[in-house]
Length: 317
Image (cartoon, rainbow, N blue to C red):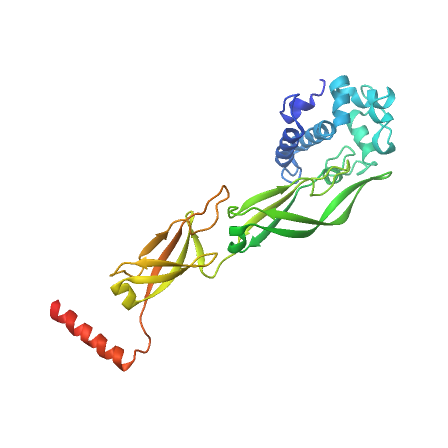
């Protein structure tokens, strides 16, 4: 049966590079030998989706495949296809029925890795096959709330394992990369930022992507409650009883807020637009939770006044 790489990946013939890459990743994770140890059918599917991806992700190979079908390699390398020959100087000899087919081609492509003893058997070493693919890299950073509020930048230095094609096959080498990442104001806690082409490079020279997860760093004053920030504000019991003005901290400065007489401990007041910046513009609200305080060591005058107040409360009870 003729191979249909598009059907193997479950995409249309008009699928773009992003759709092809997404479909491959999903299927590769599903059928990878490490996920399905000893499952020969899964190994076969993994081999098929890897083959389909290696062709459809390369514009020149895809053009040849679209024109000549499953015999695209033979047509491209012996009939004046793009590039005037195999990439990297390799020669892939097409053999007819019974002549080795896909496995012999991959054996040449990967320099004969495995010798029949590779992970997948049949002369294909799936570890080298997987290593030859572009790889995504994931990093996590913690950002203070003040910088989440204003937006900021971070320079990340990290290491990838990049594949290299040699005359003997595929090898991987550690590569140090340095990337400046822009963190937009108001980005949600746990949100991922994608930096295209900054992941690990595959044997075809194309690199995966860098994904940066942004975490809100714990703060000494503020905490996230639903979609608002909350801050605890200490208020003297006299101000809480009589009413007045208090100073409330925000991420940017302190603001003045009036509280009514008879304010209770634990009561929450909303300060509209004084919370953290929102990604799509504007700011959320800040919730000020009241904590009533009393003097730890009242003076003699304070004691006298408190006693008078206590007596008055008893008399009016």
